[in-house]
Amino acid sequence: MKRLIEYTKILRSKNAGPLYITFDLIFDSVETLQYVKDNLTTVAVAKAYNIDESAVSIISFERANSLKITFPRKTVSGAIDDVDIYGCQQHMPLADLMV
Picture 1 (cartoon, rainbow, N blue to C red):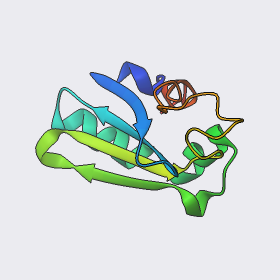
Picture 2: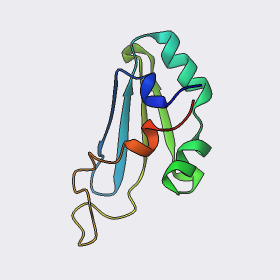
Picture 3: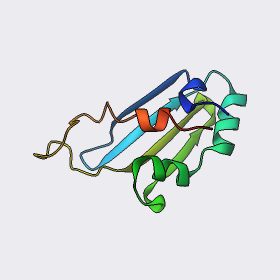
């Protein structure tokens, strides 16, 4: 068991429109993708971000050895209380998950 970031070649976050945040996880091999896909759960992601599990979507793209995780932002991008307008600094709770 290692931190999720140790399995990835690229792990980044960004906006998916003003209401959603999305994470790209890109792996060096199909075996690593499969291992993470089999062991990363919506429950773990939801717990890391303190959100409801039903809001988390994990989508696999085998051709690109990648996963995409998406869920609603807690604050609309650009709102007065938004601390990360581009959503590019939201990946560390995910990166630190043990898988």
